[in-house]
Image 1 (cartoon, rainbow over the protein chains, first blue to last red):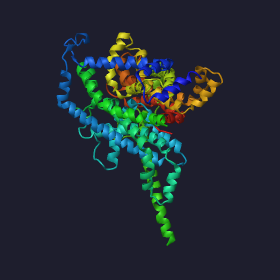
Image 2: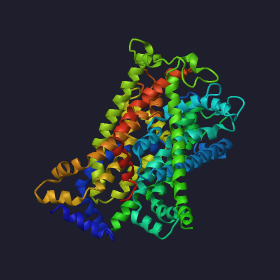
Image 3: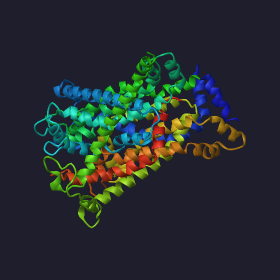
Image 4: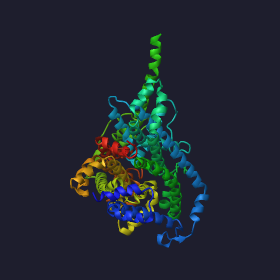
Length: 320
Length: 290
């Protein structure tokens, strides 16, 4: 009983903490920290050190000897070089296209599937399981399979297009300036639409049955019921889902890397493939580090919303 | 007249239901066809795969590609089986460590109200905001300094960095849903905090622990970038990197590659389909309010 008292006290006083009571409450809770210490320590080593190291490295350039210990200090030059290069803005535009279309299409397909699966019918569980398989298999496997489907000579998609009279010869999908990026977006959507589906299926379970029935009795159409009853209940989940997809797509690497390596002529290059090439292809570690820092700043502004939407549930609970 | 108004009232409902079904069928085709083509190709000989128009079904289906992968007396089989075991080892160790470290942390984030709790929870979640590439160079240098390059230790340590935040977040969702009164009752009956945790909370959160384990296993099994960067020796390579080295480096052996991707997908897909219920619940528990 005695240990639970300070907890109750701190819960009451969180509204107006005086300086002295902060230290006191840290002291009172000293044993609590032991629980999170292993996790925090692991995080410190694997986040703290890399972040510090990346910031530091971004101020240097690769020496002629290619030895990291001889790196040359050049201040902020890496940053100005990147931000003033046309390739950075081209890749940024491609990343935005990649992220926006992947996220939007995956979300809409997921929403459609969740709504269509939101009633009992025979085989529903199996169907859900099958639709989720692309999300579970590795992106490496998915990339190879789709690369084979898209193959310029023996690809099954090109052959089907010929079969149905859509084209008179096999199509070169990915090694093509126009169709390269859209073809990769299809693969990405295939891989992640069921993530949106699962999140939204769970969200649909929070829609009160009575409200839907009441709306039906009042003569609301299917669309009106969706828009005025179902959709408002899905807002929170949709926010989280879209944010998670967005972050994930900004950070995509495997699909373009394995399928095209960023080519042809950089037409399918996105941020992360570009950074990887800078660091491990061209050995320009400083530039890669500066690139990472720029991406990090962009991502952090997104992260602010991400964390806020993830913890909004917490705050609601705390208010209660 | 009444029959007309009846049909006009019922018709839109049928239309929505119909379009829902059509949509599901199309989506299923979109999902299944690539995987079906992977399996069909894996049953072909190299010659049969390279034909135009393609053989929709192999004229002479063969299991040779699989036999080659699983035959330890041949080079390809020996390497493939080694990659397979490496992947299993790395994934299992990562999973066990992630759960052991995440359980107390998630419990604390859920139950205790120590100062800095929210800040630390943010800090933990923050990891998933960083692109993996940011960590590549520094972690590579850290691993070299620790002498872990080309070892499984480097991968396990790295996988924990993204497995842990997720595990903590998922488990916290489960602990939040276990009524604190249960523990309080046990404490009143004389149990220590530790006993209350082990005897009351742990059993109740076992679905969460199962789900978190599957999640972290699949994550580790499928990981590519770090494995690609940290490992360059045949003995330590995991499957995603290994199969690339094998089949895609020079002239691609498509049927062999498809057989390998199929084999690589089996463990995670089976694990997932068997334990789907927990997996789905864990993913949504944290994000969807009850």
